[in-house]
Image (spheres, rainbow, N blue to C red):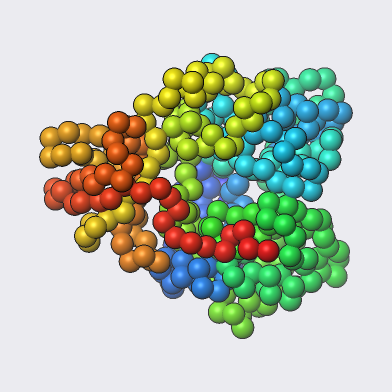
Length: 369
């Protein structure tokens, strides 16, 4: 078994008493002694800080780099401009299945930073390198940079206290300097929580200093370090899919509700013909939200039924929502089922009733200016 990678902040997490979990080949903090609910609530009500250094950091560079990315990944860079970020998909060219979902940060025509999921970085890099034209390099910087996510309604105040810029548009980024050494930091107005916030890309050598300064600056706002447990409850409340659970190679963008991340008017991208067929014919299932009418809490793998004897699907993501104080989940439900239907979920041998809904489950501040 391969040795797990560790974040450059691992010693800080140990000192804070974190409980660790394997995720995408990395040992990452699952939660701290404060617990998932308090970490989740800190993000929704004030501010939390996550170490998400397990995310991939892939630079595509060289003449025509942006055009190459646009010809392979699903979304259309022409919809944005340099200095902006875009959610996009790497699709299998034959099936249209989702190899990974990722964020593209468009620096200029010769530099696009891609941030894929940890477990899929190597495969995304492999596919891009196999198709890259002469002069275009695809470099995996997984071991070179840390990523810190400062998320919540007070995130601006925390960044400003450490001298980093704030207030730029949602899904945009700026380059800045931090500390006496003037270390470069890419300040991205992005995140996976649904709240206003930032993701900071910084060299490993400066990660400890930046983490310490952010925690100190956020003390007056009761900032809490948050782990992957809170990250999961926060993203589920938003209905954000997780690759490997809600989406994967056996899922296409149309049924996943991700058609908005497809540049349908582009001449080419991987999987274009396959997903165009699904769009034309209509999907047989769609990723839907489920919210408990009672006290049931869904978990991945639990069966969903229309009646006692009519199985529909399995829960792909499921958790207790700290905001709603109810069980919520996601599942790929056949399109023949009414959008607001009541369904059953087998929760430890009991058939609990859930209502189908369209996510997000909560209102948040993610797009506030």
